Image 1 (cartoon, rainbow, N blue to C red):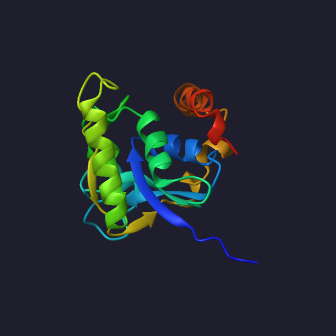
Image 2: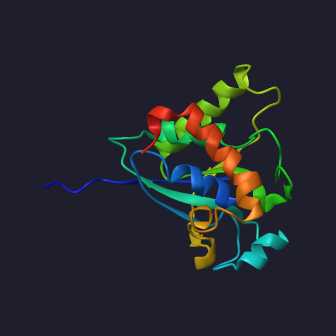
Length: 180
């Protein structure tokens, strides 16, 4: 039996709980880990990242099977799952730690992300320009255990009910063909 060759995508679009909940439902996604990337501090804590002093963003690292879901599909889901036109903000979450960011792992991902962003900005998909940062991946720091699988483990918490659930419902309606 041939072992699957998985690829990684690292993206951030506000609170990692929202993005994690969506990507966990995507066919071809093997795992999603919430964490921190894009900054300078080694092994940051949630409190340090929330302070805005580390340069890190809340991100998810998505391990996916490119035979089932393409990197371009991952980016389409990402861009339609948050507002990529607001700088350093998603809803009530404000600060650089909540910025829209793609951390590419190779030149092919960089090229796909840059071309996709340019196409979005050339179209009328969004009223405002896409401000998503596209940067080279360096290091990923998994978030504390209580952040992992947050929506699955806490569906009745107010943040999950009022913020995450509507995003998940929108995703499910738009991407029915991508659901596990």
